[in-house]
Image (cartoon, rainbow, N blue to C red; front, side, top):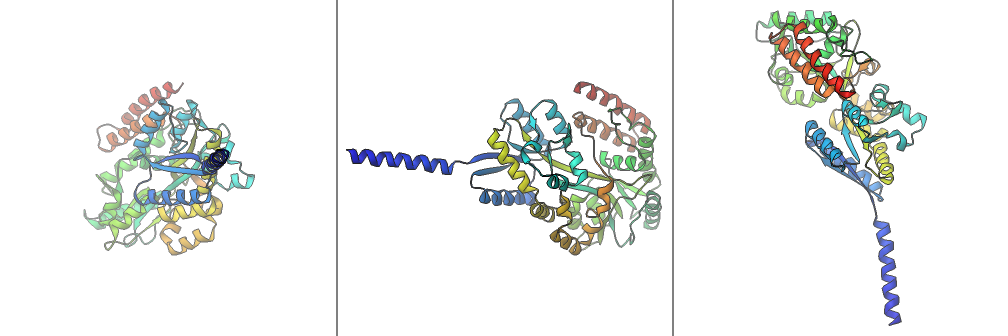
Length: 409
């Protein structure tokens, strides 16, 4: 009997020790990366899990960005948020206002060198209350896509761009247009920013109704009216690939779509957006946030994963495989990234152009931007389709946005 008890106690002890060894800190990571992007996320997660047997990160695809935001809001209401998630800056602002995030900086334990290694424009997109609340992840910038057969030397200034667009359209005689315009907030922002304007000032006073905003809309309208540009119902990448337009401005992350559309039909490349009264490179993409519902153990484990995801090797791997950009200076300066640029001159001339990082900008980071973006998008469309004058369209958007901003207080 004593022998049986001894065996039983030994078995219980072994099971207890085994349980302790096998215990893992679980970290959920919600994301919106589909297809090849999602496969790359899963590969990086699997590598991290293999290197960290005491942590298990589960990457969960939640659909597109709209679906992800909807599910995050629902999870917050139900108090079952993930540990980590991709977020846009305006989502971050809304979440911070509702006390559902904690600063990743508090758990990353970054040295000064590591902190400053994050590219400054990306770092600034992620700072609230003086802290790196979120960390940059999938970042791209807007560039000029162009048909190299029609545009051997991409324009460097807005004046050169306008003249070249008109010349190509005149020579194309209705079959080819110099530029493709889709009525988007981003394109309006690009022209307004190059003209010296922006959506808001530092105190959230509306400024897009000023002359810079009006001039930006008029520039787009005039290009359509004088046939310098084609108003596109669809994707510009397809129009460029079909040889219908010679240039368009869009996200560098769309290069794979241009490649597919242009294959065997036209030659193309990328370049920085032409400069106006000032240069400008709009940066887009999401960041990674840490939710307050996570335990202390989960927060430390999650921060370890974020550091892994954005270390020099992995940020470069992510960029090369997906078309996004490295988020650290060490990544941008790495041998692997520069070898990739040497083999891919389109990327080197466009999104990989380091000068663009010096004058990068981004969309508003305030919670009200979700609704404001829709109002401005409606205004741009109304003006381009001539349902309203630029002044009328922008004034209407301003009225709607003032209400959105008031609701934040």
